[in-house]
Image 1 (tube, rainbow, N blue to C red):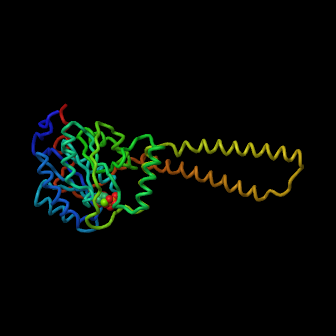
Image 2 (image 1 turned 45 degrees about the vertical axis):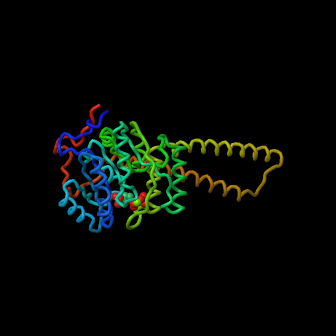
Image 3 (image 1 turned 30 degrees about the vertical axis):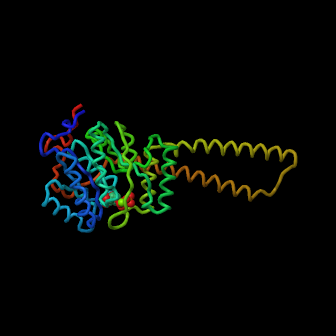
Length: 335
Ligand code: UDP
Ligand code: MG
């Protein structure tokens, strides 16, 4: 595969599309573009930057309009409300026209300079090039510890293998993007989807930088939700584990029954027993509620998917046509 394969046929189809979800990031956008644009100019024949405004309530959208007016390669989609980062990424992927798409955060935690290494790997033929964190020291120790536990759990019960330290910061070839577009699930765990699609993959190590301005938008509540989405979308273990627990407890109950039967035959009726009774009733009621809750989690997700609502709604397009208006929005590479 030669470099020339990747050259766009016309200006409408840039070589690279950078997708950046933004939610109240007005203080970071200028700094981001200052670092990003020179990198893109160095390593791509042409490019577009697609900001997906995920229901910002500050002046992020005004800044994006101004950025487009100053440079038409800066484009934006404004979603009708906050749909969450995972959905914002999906919206960006749906509208990327490049021969490759790069997904990155707006807060400069993802160093734009790494894109040069991504592009180099892509030109070597890799279609799914991801940044691999070498340490997570910018996050709090608690978040780090919980994240680590989550990945351990995911790798032991999940059906998809996640490469270690890989996140959303990555380059995807047009073919990988096309594959992701076919996945319209609402409970989106992007890292899992990126791993699921496969394609020739490579990791590029990097150090996460500190957030430039503002605070992380991911509270522990949101992270828990994401972790549950990840586990439930990529594993049926939580559903299956109940048959094992159920058989084990029934076996235990049978053993107890025979024990009491024999004891009663030998020693006669033993009147007290209230304590053991109430303990076991409460214990098994708890187990039943827990297993029902797990079923509920899955059924809730099935319900969300069968409604077949659109993933997101767009309120405003800045320099971006609806998909299909200017021909196929994706131009697969030859070869
Ligand atoms: N983001 C978004 N929608 C949200 C939350 C976050 O589009 O509901 C964007 C945010 O603007 C940033 C990226 O997702 O560009 C990563 O968010 P953040 O830095 O808050 O997450 P963290 O780095 O702590 O994982
Ligand atoms: Mg961040």
